[in-house]
Image (cartoon, protein in one colour):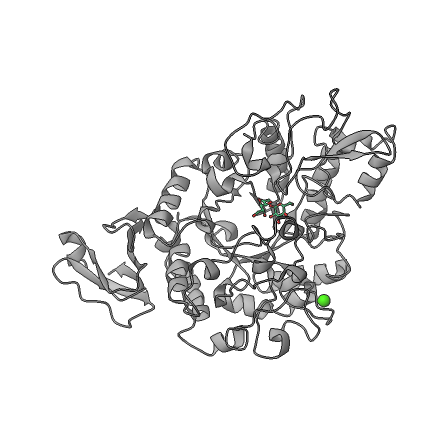
Length: 535
Ligand code: TEU
Ligand code: CA
């Protein structure tokens, strides 16, 4: 690992949901200049790159994940000049920019779809997936939308159905059409030429569907989408050569990066892993931490499963939060205490694998409670009250204690969390014990002490519920990380060799001096996260 530092492997990546980060022109919606205004903050926190959720023109049925033009900036976020300014300034701050490419589907307002839907004879008809009704009537097959209901929408004007894995306003592109494929590779080129450093590929493993479109076989599950095995509507073999082509394009520029998103990142790491390494993607997301219950063994299990399935030349990544899931502070935090969040942060930032942070995670932002009348996310409207959608984790960034948390002077598009007068960036920056400072210290430490980001996690734990302790070894460094998941004082049992080792305390949220090992036991305070380095 003596090689040169790679930003996407050795650094920390910070996801920004642009609508919710900072509003520079007081219209209640965050924008690119808002991001630019906070680059100092991001540099101080210590992140290496920001991933921007989609910033392209969009009718916002799925808040940017329904794209109406891949090579322009939505006016609500600014102009192409604003984007170039942000990119240039970010680079001056040593911060790379990763864009979100949503190439599985477009908006139904994209000019391509409008043409495609205009008649069966239109030259762009075959840019999307159109099909005659089933001879028995109804949709062509049993495929379901992940957002609910059949994945086929009938278009009375032209007498055919079109396919949409997500909302009906998000028709899937036909990647089997060479014109589509060429156009999409040009989208990569367009942003690469502007100097963009990397891409997050939205649901890339859905690009190809089986050409004959057979029914998916049934499986036990709660709702339509989960009651099928997704054999024919995802993970088709044609994806592999396409990834190779994308990778070759990226590799023709220096230090470019692509990370892919799949549903499988949640529960099928093996299938996500097949797309990583050697001539394919640099990485695919593992989302297991976003589902882990507060139990040391669950986190360890997720790490081990991920390490086991990844090819040797692929690099892991870990995520506690993103714009689709309930925030970790809401899942793990007890009341206003951030004790558990410090433990989770220490876990995330001492793994061999790129850590992804999500805006506000560093100050422990909690989900907002949305009332039915406040819901913005259509899945929330559809499945209320069983599932309230994804608005909870998308509330405005809490910058300070002023009106609307310093996000905007105008009423923001989603309510600000009511805890903002006390929970905000300004307050935490002036409190040395805050979660923010703990994240900042961990990020610094990870940078300064390579074993923390390079060493494999070798568990020492005896108590699978309450304690996670692990050794890490890389080069001539050995580190010991001990995390107390419980609110009780505990001890980690050490072997005689480890007990005799002279440990230097790098960081603990509970003590300034190293704990005294006695009787082969390393004591831990309640919710202590402690990082030791062999002297
Ligand atoms: O998400 C795909 C995906 O996994 C989600 O649809 C997930 O199943 C859902 O959010 C429930 O948690 C990506 C984007 O991250 C998401 O925001 C988009 O809505 C979706 O693709 C369509 O582009
Ligand atoms: Ca704005």
